[in-house]
Length: 149
Image (tube, rainbow, N blue to C red; front, side, top):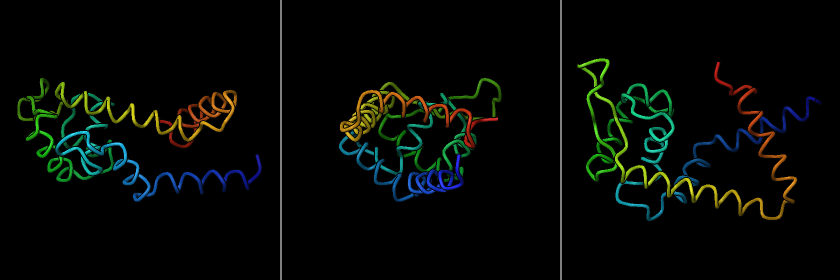
């Protein structure tokens, strides 16, 4: 692989990881999903869907926010019935954040929208190109610089 390919991939990742890029995508995914579901609360919902019940501190590390930011967003989501706080079975002093059934449905809606958005953006690609891209992207994420150690 040439050094140019590494730079090209790094530039593309830079665009994907920009806060503005993520906020615009989250806004499209959450439009009219429900009260309190927006580009700021989406990471909390999505993070809990990926990880299951977590403390605010643990979730903060997972989604790239500080604990107080997660707590504020979680309070908004709890007020409208999308998540609940429950006792941590391993630590009586701690509380876990968990999605309610309504919260799970909201996440399912946003994930369906994301899949449709991705599929629409790949509509001009051949089926082989799409499959190759999906397979290689999965490989890159699981074995590349973002792989969990």
